[in-house]
Structure formats: structure tokens, C-alpha cells
Image (cartoon, rainbow, N blue to C red; front, side, top):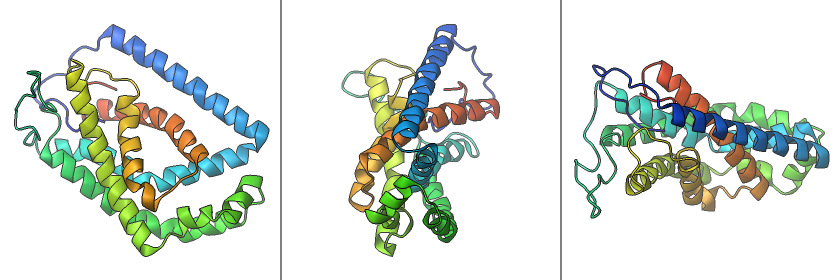
Length: 247
């Protein structure tokens, strides 16, 4: 998610019909992929197992989601901040990151991710009781394979590093995405399918992996679900004036 929108005095530019069409196609493909995932899991396990996996995945990766959203709000707070590249170009003559990536947005998003993620810890006891009370097949596997401990009962040290690394990883993933966006000649606000939606979550998970080793099917579910959340969040940010494009 981009960190800041155009300055408030600038009107939103007209949306490119081609990009709008591409977004619609992308949403349809991602939607079909999620439906297939739900159907397959319902066939081999149960629909309840899908929601358990989705819920635990979203909860576990919450610091990355919060930090990613936090960059947008921190970056737009009281005007634009200083660009992280200080206006400099890369060796290809194009901006390193672009004016949308600011120090205020980067560190603001990180701090928001850390602060709000600690609040989520308060609901862990209730979630532990809910999961333990389930009778579904994958819930039993979660308990048997000690995955419940990984998600809801981590050590204090693991939880600390998980929150820190997921939060900073989301910010770094967004920054890296902007770097490659500039290298491919895409302007700020132009689409970069999958990189825009998954770059932050994958970099965050890679950094936090030693303290948060999710099973592959948890990672698959979250990677299919994240683009839908990302698109929805961007649409909301667009209509409340935090972004100049809804993607």
C-alpha cells in the first residue's frame, strides 16, 4: 500500500479505464482462486478448518497488515514528509523509491504496527479457549503438532521478535516493491500486480520465519486472501482521501 497520497490541494486525477479494467480482472482471478481454495479444503477437511486456518493466519500476520496500513495514515498525517530517497535517482536515471515513500510513513507504519499488535495479545486467551473447544479435524492436528503454541502461546521472546520483524518487514517489503516499480518504469499509483499485494507480506514473513514457522498451507491461504484485503483497503483509503487511486 502506498504511504501517501498527493497533496491535499491537488484534485484526484481521473482513473485510467485500462487500469480499472485490469483491477477488475485481477479481482476476479483472485476471487476464483480463493473460492477454489475453500472448496478444496472443504472436500479434504471441512469448511470450519478453512476458517480456523484463515483466522489463525490473519491473527499471526496481523503486525504486517497493521504496519502496512499504518504507513498510509502516518505518511499523510499533517502533510507530506521527507522522501526516503531525498529526491535522488538510481543509476538508471529514475527515482530510487519515489516521493510517495517517506521517512515519516516508514517509521510511522512500523510504530503503529508494533503498538497495535501488542493490543491483540490481550485477546489471545479467549482465542486459545475457542480453538481448544473445537472438534474439527485440523484443530486436533494443530494441537497435536504444537501449532497452537506457535500461533497463540509463543514465548515472550518469540512474540516480541515476531511483532518487531513482521512490522518492519512489511515496511521494507513495501519499499522494495516501490524500488522495482521504479525500475520497470511504472509511475506512482500505477499497478504492479501481485508485487503490490504480496510483496510486503512475503518479506515480512521471511524476516520473521525463525520465530514464526507457519505450515505451508497456512501461508498459501494467507497469500490468496491478502490481495482481496489489500484491494478492499485501498478502495477505502481512496474514498476517504488517503490515496489518489483505489489500488
